[in-house]
Image 1 (cartoon, helix red, strand yellow):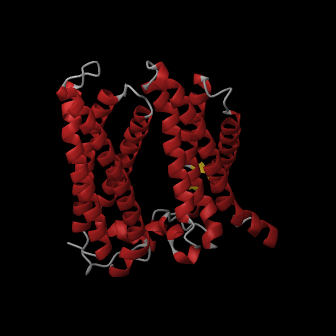
Image 2 (cartoon, one colour):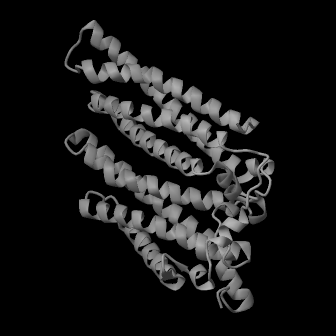
Length: 344
């Protein structure tokens, strides 16, 4: 088992957050079974007080899991590779974990998504006097618990597979995935130029839809659906284009398709705002797509959900603008300095 003070901090934060979820989960279980908003007996009043306490515990657990995820990402990208022979970035750390790294990142991301959805629903519920979403939120909260347990278990299992005395290949893994130069200039058999064209088109479309989503248009279901759909299409295209094309202008070397090297200090830690913007856009797109649908039958909450969608549209527009500036600026500067793109 690989132990590191930062890893202990991650596991400790996850464990404390899990205990908070378990404590709140007991109340959520009781709420799912016995919530009666029309009643005024002692059991209902006591349950209402317990629901408020459970909401506070759940929100605290959400922030703790987010803190643990940030520490985990920082450790993989910038810290743990120092103890693994041959590792120079997060790619080497993930290689040392084997398949456990993929499962760990998937479970961590899924947990944050589910917690964010519950957090938004709980926030809408607390804005209403009669708490109309309480029972639904309780059932949703119970779905968070198994994902949190699996995330904690997978964190331990992934790092248990690391053997610090065993060397890894790291950069060789990045370069060996392309037997020929032609394959290095394409993604899934599609030339880089087509991916870049798709990226520019979807970026322009997403910016336009985000700007068009205002107080007068946010009630349009089709517009919200198209905006969320374009976001879901744009995110993988943007991520692939960043790693396979635009990252070359940050590394100043061709065909180094490594997503983790963007987090290194020698590249100005640019991976944090870039991937952070992608993550934020994904969360806000899910908010726009799911939140109004989940409360469509409750008029007093639906208006608040639309206001939240309006804020989400503004946030993803700002996040995309930041991503485009940080991702494209080095390429534009290179073109202005040398009069040619790196690909020729």
